[in-house]
Image (tube, rainbow, N blue to C red; front, side, top):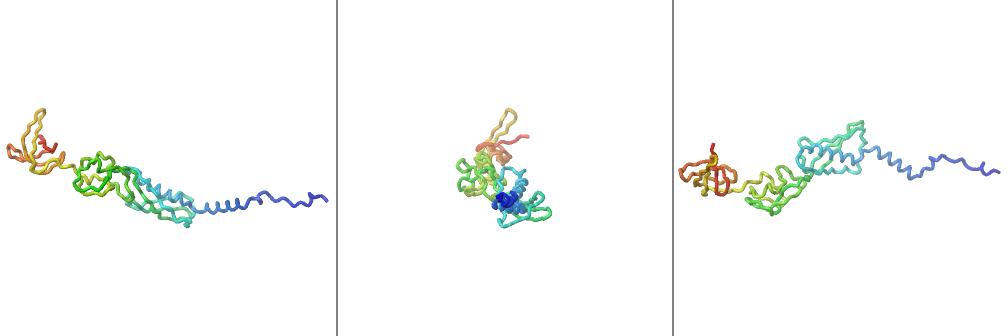
Length: 243
């Protein structure tokens, strides 16, 4: 008897695919039905970056991940993301991500916005009327949820300026919090100057108000007794501007 005639027919090669490979293919097919969460996060973050493209300074955008149990049908069209009307591009906000395909859906995803722009902040607790010195300030990044409106990036912009109110350590030093220091006090003796070409006339005077550098104040002329307006030029000098 011929042994070859007793052999069983050989099954097609495709039937011998390992079970593990078949399971992988099934899992891949199932995964392809659902929208990847990473794409949803990216859509929300990109919407914020686009809205902030014209704002000063760089930002870092961190979108939360959807609930891992959430399964949304894969969108046949590019995802669309929208920010709330009038949303401030700082701190935390909620972005709407939607699919407008044949199986539409929408999801609201929290997004954290942090400024990565360096700003001048108080290096320690500072009291009102402090004249800012190098040791009073430092450069740092804004913390989460802190508005960057009016902040300054160069310590040279604040040195020598006077604080209008107290600041806690780490708080941003904004332009609205600063005043030029007072150089002249009311009742102080000053020299009134009037410049005309290469000639200068100087007389003694008495300041009628406090004044910072470049500020216009009233000064009583010590010779005539008249009150004139003059610009503070230094701690002892005010200039009468001749027309």
